Image 1 (cartoon, rainbow, N blue to C red):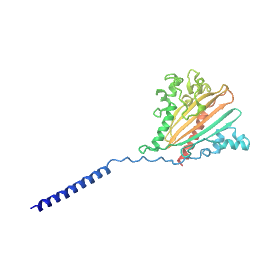
Image 2: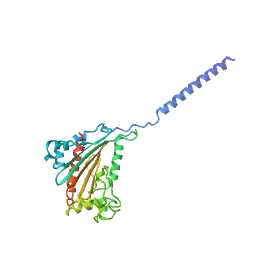
Image 3: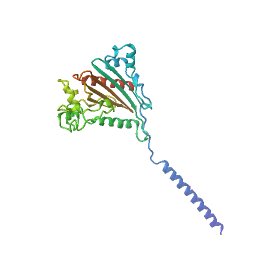
Image 4: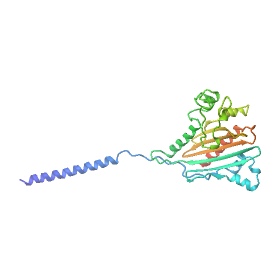
Length: 292
């Protein structure tokens, strides 16, 4: 009679162990089936172009008047450009050029920044968009504001400041979005009643057009996002300088183009329209080159 309970006890132990094994297996399966974070896709660009070779010689001749008339060795030095000091050429590179002509000095610089996100939940493109947005904000712009005739209805836009409806040019001078120390705002640039960049643009040209009325604005059809920042400054006591910056993002690369003119005479005012058109044209060429 003692044998039967023993068999029953053995069967119970076997059933208990089986149940425990199934329980552990179910627990493991439950953990394996728990939601996982899918890594965000990497950016399109894994490398950056050689910046000092990114601008064709013909374009440099157009942007740097007077350089083509220099002696051979000096001309080559100007067109060769000067590479920016950087410690990680996979992430950030740049180049600058400068030409001194009898009537004015022109300078050009370009910067490429490849943004990489180290957060698996954030893509490189999204991180680059954050970097770009900070530059746009520093310029006092917003991509949600529609440039053109209705732009003045948006609070704080350059057009509203020009009319004196916003906070005023002196109350809110946007810093140079590209961080160019030579393009920092100068109090003398707002001495006119209209103040701000638009004030000086109109001061030197009685036929100020739409681009003079809205010197800084969001641009369309350039990369994934872009803006133009037009900043007039007084370079010392003898002449005026104007710097136009075009910043755009394409995938995970943010590109900055700075084009500046400093006339030789204080009575001369840089042509804002010309600087803007040439800076935009170069930016579009760079965007096309990146897309190839």
